[in-house]
Amino acid sequence: MKPKLSFLISGGGTGGHIFPAIAIGKALQASYPDAHIKFVGAKDKMEMQKVPEAGFDISGLWISGIDRKLSMRNFVFPFKLISSIFKSYGIIKKNKPDAVIGVGGFASGPLLFVANLLKIPTLVQEQNSYPGITNKLLASKANKICVAFDGMERFFAKDKIVITGNPIREQLLTCQKTNGQAKAHFELQDVPTILIIGGSLGARTINQAIEKNLNLLREQGVQILWQTGKSFTTTKEVYGKQTAFITEMDMAYKAADLVISRAGASSLSELSALGKACILVPSPNVTEDHQTKNAMALVSKNAAEIVKDANAEQDLIPTALNLMVNKTKLAELEKNILSLGRPNATDAIIKEIEKLIVD
Image 1 (tube, rainbow, N blue to C red):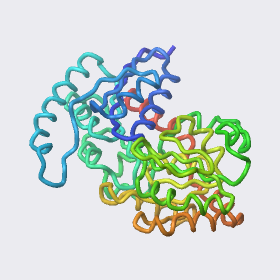
Image 2: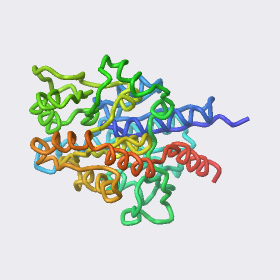
Image 3: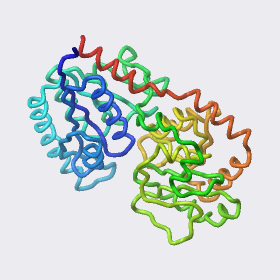
């Protein structure tokens, strides 16, 4: 019988960090039903809502990033960091983890920093082709670094790197609905459908491009399933369905004949594992333009199309409509992106965690 174990999982800020963290938590729970699993996030960030919804306990740290321009938030940062380090120490002492897992985001910094000081095994999971500052700082002391892209030895010690891919939500892989059934679930017609996902918080440029071209989409007989995020609404008539947030992403992907998405690592991992033809619109508002680097890793293998954020308003919908009528190209994109998928990424990460515990 497997012994009782304790794990701490930290990170968040966006769905791109939160959903992989939850996937790891659920996989650990399945492997070790008696294990104690606790999450650590940043106060007032979306993980404080999403993690409890997934059935896990979470503690929040008073932590945030540093602004690149002069601001009052930067003056407060040292106090937040010190506070979070002390709270992380208390969390670790109370929970006595056998391993601490960081998935990126501000909250993982203090927790893994303290875990490293206390000689507790740590694993960093880096989703992107260009790592964030938190993971860069933690990597030198981490025992293992799980990545999704080739060439990460540019940033991390080669002997610590394991290419596992990114964890994705299990329900995405197990959905048995057909394309038609999924469309009916969202009360959509059985006609060509584009799924538009700008990330968990929405994407203003993509939303504006869609809104401007709603009439064109209708004229071409193409309906949309449109996740706008909470900060965007439209008064125009939508051919299809518009919603702030889609909770049943397994059904949404099944309903889609084409996906328009940002190029966050988690989204790309899901699209690859499911073999979905896609047009990527990398966000320009990310560190080191890493979404463009993520996207080009697929585009270079003819596994996705790309439209620059600055060109989205004029190019995005024409590109999408051209693809929708080019069934050969759609099938080619689906085949190529599926070949890049790593649907067993979560299991591979769990094996690396288990190695740390044994060692």
